[in-house]
Length: 359
Image (tube, rainbow, N blue to C red):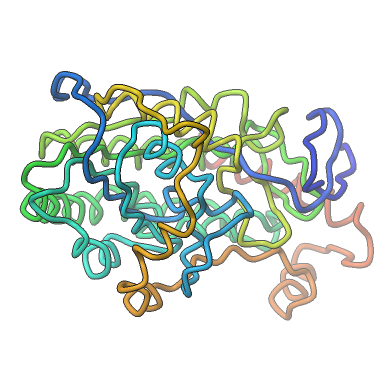
């Protein structure tokens, strides 16, 4: 087994090398949109409201707007890029940690009959994806990755469709004239784990990517039922997952809130590229403007700040082998926690066993 090293936050290296903790971020992309539902291209201009979670707010880009919240909104996120390119008046409501209930309770008030365009990504937090990633990042001898994934898939199959149907109905009621673009999620992994302090196996990464596909499938179906356009970024992100070069998605990073989210390139070259055509709007970028104004975004969100602060930020945790749980699991597995070789050897053996149960 190759030894792992820490992930660098400055520049990605070859996937054949182990890199430093603290990398940028990337994600998966492609246009899986129901463009047949789109109206003909129209002149630029109009009111655009960006709803959703961290994949729309810009978490992972490392540069955030100071608006008195923990939403981690960024001028480098695709809503800002799209608004600047298309000459739209942006109201940026997407917020890190948002669930379907959070979008309903804190973001829909920005919609009105004059809203021309809406984008939204939501559902990953309802399925508890941050908790799933935290569980699966641990050595296999102390984690229940399969159980965590099974639980997330159960929510996606049995609970999320009803929530999305109700949410999308509310969006249409509040913004009856808007073109609504529902945005999906990329594959985070490429089958390799190059982070020093995570233990994702190839089988676990495959199941995690399949869970993103399942989430996209259920979201796409709910969007189609309401007549909304669905944009799937998966294909666009192929070759740019965690441990690819270049990465458009962060692996385990420092600060940890940056982990497993699209970085600047992921939004610019991934999400913005696949979402922009779905607006059906002629390009009309302001001279020299490549992003929307941070001051304008912050000003537009001041009246919503109290509501935004009710949203709990999503939290991924670094595997901690010093806890009582880890020590008990190590004892059961015969692992010497003082030896990285012992930790890794047991992880490989347990991962192989767990992989066999998923076939």
